[in-house]
Length: 138
Image 1: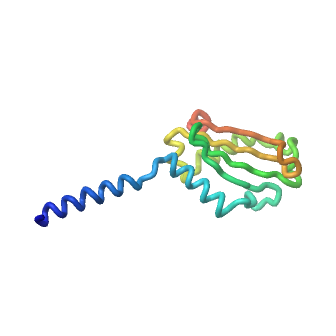
Image 2: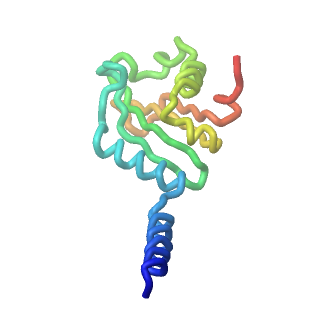
Image 3: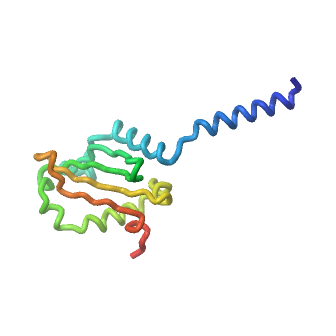
């Protein structure tokens, strides 16, 4: 086998191997959520001891990133969420999050679930942001 043929075969094999190893955006989202949860959760949010991020998951069927929070202390009640327009704050935060740009460009959803620390089955707040929310300009 001449040198030219050998290089051609090696190039084809390398290209096939690289393309087989590439993950889809959905697979990347799922992997990143699992890795983040494993390495960082639970963790306090923004230095608060009353709000904890318990996990992040990616729902492939609905293309939704789901963040699950646990509220304790002063935030462990529904009234705590009525004082601030949380939805608008989350939209602003998402618009400014460059690490999620590929997912925003693909039109993924972002959901936030806040559960009570004292009553784990009780959801205090649930917000889902869609492309229509974070792509609109003020």
